[in-house]
Length: 215
Image (cartoon, rainbow, N blue to C red):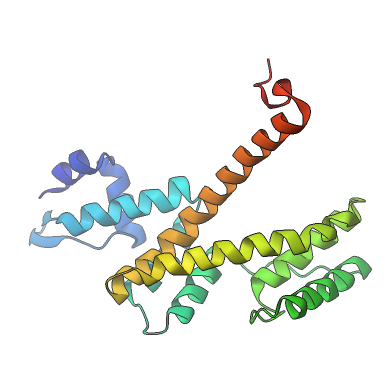
């Protein structure tokens, strides 16, 4: 199909498709002349994937490129693929100094030990968690750290569901894409569920008005 047909089928503007081609998140079509190329159903699928990562997952084009590079060159080790996708989505946080940060890092290290999790304490996610705790402490909310055990238990169940989903993939290529889709869209799905649960719990505790739309 020509680019105009690809645009019609995918609902993505021709100008946007050309932008994705320039940025390398959409592979080039098969050249039929100096100014013409043919595109396939694979391009249509990739367009849907890119739009999902950008619009639902909130990734930048650079982040999408990093994720898709991993999807396009999957390794036999799913842990490696998962870690690579996570690092593409989850930039290493800037280091912060001070007593609060050091204490927060100690808290995260103890949490990992208590849980028996294999995640290293210098993983970007662990460092990001330490930054969150340090920030909460600086704002006068050190009690946020008390939530960690309950949050961690819930996160552990979510992680098992994530990996169960990946395990169902029929091939390594599908598993690699499942890592990207499951991680990016899973984050958005989990955030939406959390908001819904908060509304429900608020209504149950405080009454209907607590969950009503402001007006």
